[in-house]
Image (tube, one colour):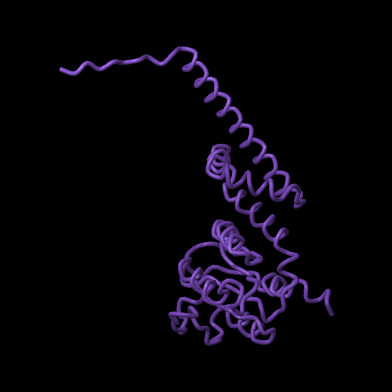
Length: 232
C-alpha cells in the first residue's frame, strides 16, 4: 500500500487567501457601485463623462449591474441605453468624417410588414421592393437619394456577414454604419463593430418585439446624414 503524505496548508496562507478574496469582492462591489452611479448620471443628464471608463465598467460589471437594477425594479436595459448613448458620442467624429456613399443603414426585419413581399438574398439580405406596406419603403427611397446602402437583416449572424462582405477590412464600400435595433442588440452591435474599426451610430426601435415594431424615421435619416451639413 502506498503511503500518501498530506501536507496541510499553513494557516497564514489560508488567512492571506481569505483576505485576498474578501478584498477582491469588496473591490468588485465598489466597481459595480461606481458603474451604477455613472449609468444613472448619464441616463438622467445625457452628459457623457469618462466615456471609455464607463464603457469598460459596463463590460466588466454588465451582468451584476443588470441583476442589481432588476432587484430594485429598474429596467435593466438602462445599461444598454447608456452604452448606446456613449457609443454614439464616441463614434461621432469618425462617422461624421465619412461620405454618404460610404455609409450603410442596417435594419431589422421586425419592422417590415407581416405581408411583406420582399425576397431574401443570400448576400444582401431582404431586398425591399418599396411596396409601401411599412416604413422601410420610405427609408429605401431616402437611402437611394442619398447614395447610402440599405440592408434588411433577418438575424444577427446575417448582419455580421453583410458587414464583413461590404466592409472587407476597410477596402469595401461600407466605411460607417447606422444600425436600428432594440437597445440590447444595439449595445452588443456597437461593441462588435467597434472591435473591427467601423464607426457606427445606433437608433433604437420605438416599440420592441419580434414583429410589427416601429421606428422614428426622422431620427434614422438624421443619423444617416450626420456630419454632412457641416461640410456644406
